[in-house]
Image 1 (cartoon, helix red, strand yellow):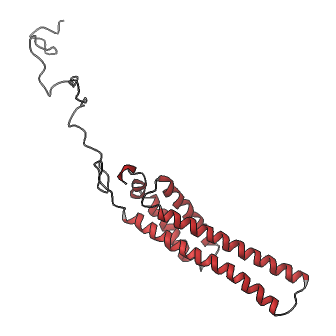
Image 2: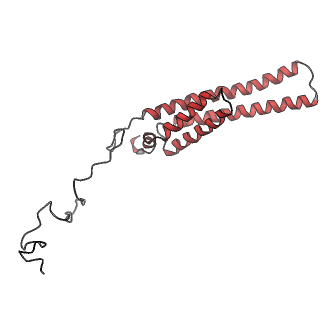
Length: 196
């Protein structure tokens, strides 16, 4: 069996090149990238526009909402931290005004003041961390998204201990986790960094 015979249905007739578009893809000419079957591949397209290099993506609505919620919760924690520290000093001074405290009462008062100051400092650190994460939402990468999810997870955990007063923090924390973990949030934080 010869592939050069004119009556062979599997062979190429002698003296004729293969017609373009039929059979297996041929080797591309030099300088042209090889193409597979079908149409050439389209450039990657982002779900938020800006699929072409140099185009600017717009922050998705859910990511914007998560950023605003981070600012709000950071502000609430900031106010709570300052309030806890101020309240600890006010409480101790009120106890001292009422009269001399026994040794056990004074130890208990100092312990209570120390716990309130410690809680206030932790709340202040937590607030600053939340605000830093919110500020980095525009330009931050996947680490900012993961940091926001972890931050909101701790906020949800701590708000469970303060229910029913912590219901606002609980709801906002859950919403931050959901909006940051959604596919549009992931696409925003994993976008091409050369846009800025």
